[in-house]
Length: 308
Image (cartoon, rainbow, N blue to C red; front, side, top):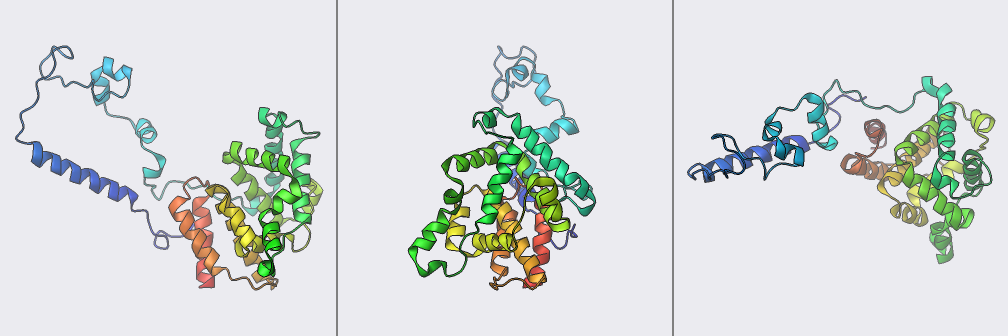
């Protein structure tokens, strides 16, 4: 994790506090001379007891006005405040991407994800002829075996159209709908699955074939990374996806190109700086749904220094 000095801190929380203070000051000056309104006798017969009916958020508080004035404990306060308005402290643990030490669990977690899919009613409704693990792995293999065109794409319109419909041409309509439904239904799990696949690919690629029945042809991932970051068809494809999918695909595409640079295998000479700047800004502004947001930003800040 980077030190706090390297990353710009969010101004949302202090700005929110200033707005509240300003509002309270204005109310005081404009209303200090106004006599208090008489309290309805139907609400409270005791003098000095304020009416909470108009402000009660639910029926329970309207029955017991004192309940709304009781101080909230730490757990209730955390539940009442939106997560994106809670300022993290230095002691707050942040989720980190799976490390090399967790490699033995990566395959187990991926298989557990597929086993959970098999129990879902929406998966059963597709009437797959095998388990979701085998079926989806076969789809991944088709994608890897048929990379898109990443050079001279703009020489003719047909190539651009083929790239824009690349996955549709390979997988077909029904499989595209299946994948989109999985991405929608399993949003809270997809990020970890991708992180575990990436860990295996980086640390022990042979186990993909041995444990997950997936063979990655040489340069296939590099071709797809260039496709998403540097072709019209790839960029159009990402533009049609939800922000979570777009940020994840862009992040791993950048990592693949970076590793190609380290190994001297960036044969197309793709420049990473524009993609790094664009994704960094997108995650800073709209990356709250990402589980590993801070880890992605740490990695991207490091890459910004390397490629500036």
